[in-house]
Amino acid sequence: MLNDLGLHYLWWILALVLIAAETLLPGYFLLWIGIGAAFTGLAMLVLPGLGLLTQAVLFGVFAFLSCAGYWYLVRPRLQAREPGDARLNRRGEQSIGQHYVLAEAIVNGRGRARVGDTLWTVSGPDLPVGATVEVVSVDGNTLRVKAPG
Image 1 (cartoon, one colour):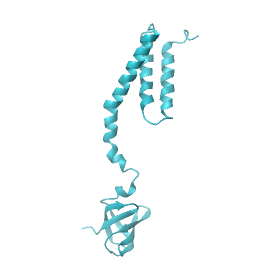
Image 2: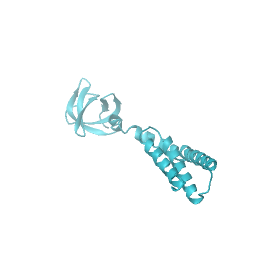
Image 3: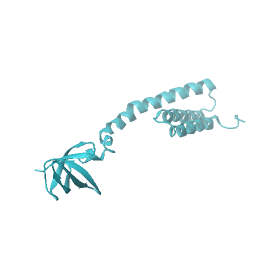
Image 4: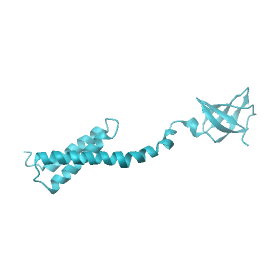
């Protein structure tokens, strides 16, 4: 039965299984191994008479090349984006340098400012309600502010 089915289909099925398994596991390793299996299936489509050992060697070579391609070409680009992405879920740090209006006066160094649709606790010099402040740093959930100027 397997002889009736082109061997290249088996490699492509293996590629799909590996790529699907990648969605269940963290990292990118199985994706690139799956791409190696897909290229082996493509080689079997072009050269259907390859022996099992040759297929295994081709799979190893393609898997190694695809992993190396990830390591040297894709991974550096992903890492280059990390500084911008590192602040993605740290909303307070995204506020540094921004100007906001005080919703509650800063008294004894503590007040509240409206940031988007929420109120954030701010610390800084005493200022009245409605004053504009500039965020200079973040300490936990508190924005350290100063009067702009």
